[in-house]
Length: 97
Image (cartoon, rainbow, N blue to C red; front, side, top):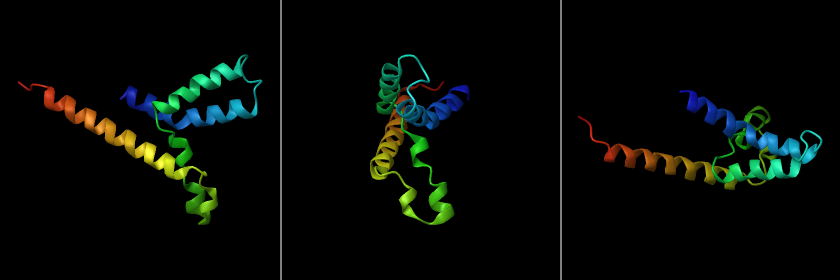
């Protein structure tokens, strides 16, 4: 359960941290190397914060979606299918006694 909350926190916030480091480089000493490390996470975790559709639901305008929203949806679905496939594979290999 702790791992699930940690995953949700990281997947929801690392996009915002990258954006903060892009706009304000005075937050940390070596912002460029920190940002490159955080950006590396985008290949391992989906950016759930970028798919926030509250503004679209409130105002009914699709302009509030990010420009690369199809890629974000596809990457999240790919990540979900990959994790489910991994879970099925692990459960099939486990011997229940």
